[in-house]
Amino acid sequence: MSEPQANPRRWTALALIALAQFMVIMDTSIIGVALPEMRTDLGFSQEDLSWVFNAYVVAFGGLLLLGGRLSDLFGAKRVFSLGWAILGVGSLAAGLAGEVWVELAGRAVQGVGAALIAPSALTLLMMLFGGNPKELTKAFALYGAAAPAGGTAGVFLGGLITEYASWPWVFYINIPVAVLALVATPSLMPDAPARRGSIDVLGAILATAGLGVAVYAVVRAPETGWGSAETLVVLAAGIGLIALFLLLQAKKAEPLMPLRILRTPNLAGANLAQLLMAAAWIPMWFFLNLYLQQVLGLGAFASGSALLPMTVAIMLMMIVLAPRLIARFGPNPLVVTGLIALAGGMLWLSFVRSDGNYWVDVLPASLLAAAGMALAFIPSLGTAISSARPEEGGLASGIVNTSYQIGSALGLAAMTAVAAAHGAQEVGNPGALTDGFSAAFLGASAIAAAGAVIAAITLRKPAGAADPTSADPASESVPTP
Image 1 (cartoon, rainbow, N blue to C red):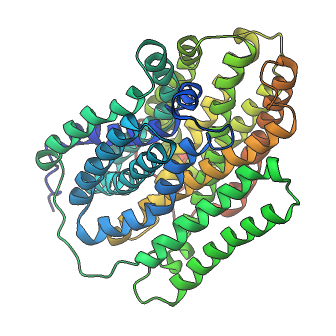
Image 2: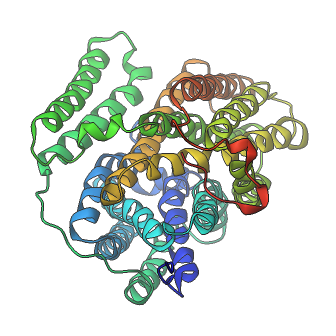
């Protein structure tokens, strides 16, 4: 039988899909260097400033399941376009904001747009390449490289834009990209018929509210005390909302997230790996940027440039090395090995010195961490997506993106609290700042190490799967996850 004809413009479409992943992840990090100027211009308090990051991540992570469901029901192509339109509007509002509440609202709208773009982009990737295992591995490599590259490049671009333009341009940069995506999507992306089904709006509200309340509790904990009544009550409320969401999913006929999907072999383990990977990785680049600026004294542009070797290493390893290693050894060993390497890089960074230098204290450890991220990201992502049934591709995409964003939000919130407890609030005191950043790196290392242990326990080769060690590396085929 002849294979179905491949889409002749699939690689051009993949470039747009990878750009989407790059942009939605970049928007989590590009504001980091701009925060001091935003605080001055808009009147943020030190406590509220972190919500410029959190407003985006909470809306993004909390609504990803809804985005995946909408993608399955109305077609990934339509939802992809709608997401870009919303992201463009939110970016314009955030750039024009003259008050704190307008800025946070704009960031939340950006997060809503990203929550529609990310799962529909993954669904479109599977539609374009799912019939060819060899091409699917390459597509995942290019797509996977876009995520950590976007996070790291955001720091560089944020520094460049803040130093040579002004902070609103870290948001305006999204607008021409959104216009380009809206123009290109109709001709590049495959169509999918709409399906009948209901939309669990209450479930989406509960998931988003639960995540937001939990993050708020962790962010406020250093001020109010981890054992204070406020922290415990708010944290319990967040956990309660998430528990209510899960209870609702178990009872609804057409839930936002059918809990049975979590019983799919390896899906839960792969999502846990993504969650813990993000919970370690995002705090690393966040505090590494602060160490470069506040302790080593680099400017915004120089600090962003210092992270470029890590970005280049991730992209090269994901595109060139990871697919061959997956074909040779299978995905599961790479997830474990990558998380161990990530933990090792974080541990190395925990020895940073207040009188240190970039070449000794930062570069070698950051490259080791980048190698770990490159090895673990693609196989865990591919396992999470391909474990689900084809008709649940949008749902699986939403779940894995949710896992990554929840890990990002909670990991950064927790490590910010750890850093503050060990002296990172003493701006102008290099010794205290270094102690705080070191504690955050050490905590991130522990998270990545826990992820490696959990992945080793939960990820299993399905019965009857071929031995991956007998595969030909040159074939670059996708092993059965």
